[in-house]
Image (tube, rainbow, N blue to C red):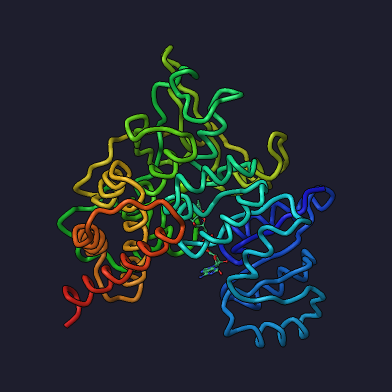
Length: 395
Ligand code: NAD
Ligand code: MG
């Protein structure tokens, strides 16, 4: 029996995780579930999976959560705030943490799980983008097992040879990691009309159903940029080892190319329950409730090279990856501000990349070597991005 904490239970990944867990009550027990808003959903989830703790991230909503818990007859203890998120991620009783909070808010609880040596199912790519080396060092020291949940990284993980040693691509005979991405909803849209892209248009992904922020990141391909950085840290690869391939149908989730000319790919329907189930059961396999691929239904399989004029955020992320930790932390922070501003209607779609680039250009190079310094860079980049937005896009 595995005891699991699900951080970000009310989100897209969180709901899919509970769906897989609920299919296998004999294998998984839920210790804690957490959410920021959507308290009713959180209570409904608690009714179904009976955790010991329900954590509400937003302290201001603690009383409301307690009242709801009584209405829903929840016996779990209700906790709130940042410290509680960390406590349920490193508790002695748990084996596994699903890290599925979105954005920088996931960094500290995910790191708490890593430092406590847990099995960490990593969906929250932003945590790794922000803290790369420190995150990996902490895992090495504690013995935490990091299993990638991002579908591309989960695919790469499945395509690596057994016993792959971190960073030893050459020794393993690997010539390239091929990171696939659909190209999002604007792959074929006239570039001249990008200025007119609406929030609704950017919020509908052709293949995947996901949370709001990652859906916008997929439309700008910043998501692939963050995944590029994530892949470097997860597998000990250098930027030159990774190639982004646009594959609009999203059946191949990524590939590994070997020196003998072989390419190993992982395929499946675009359903996050596959990588979630793989992470939960690794190295075994369990039913995830996912429809099997029907090859008679897959007439088209196409591939393209991403165009940086169409996807300037992808280039910014690859450049930041080459530059180092401060740059990737700043880019992640600026992007969170820019995407939130786009979703509030304050800036246009193409302005997201402008805000990101100008924020990076405004800031002096520094080196970061502690979580404190990383959090300082995150705060400073958010302020700089806000300033860019106020100065440029509001009257
Ligand atoms: P989502 O927006 O659907 O859910 C986010 C979750 O985080 C919710 O439970 C929310 O309450 C919680 N949360 C938000 N702000 C918080 C805060 N300040 N403090 C604590 N909790 C907070 O997002 P999602 O699509 O499920 O994505 C979650 C993570 O997984 C992201 O990092 C995303 O990049 C990654 N991911 C998602 C998918 C996908 O298919 N959705 C695929 C790959 C990776
Ligand atoms: Mg992905």
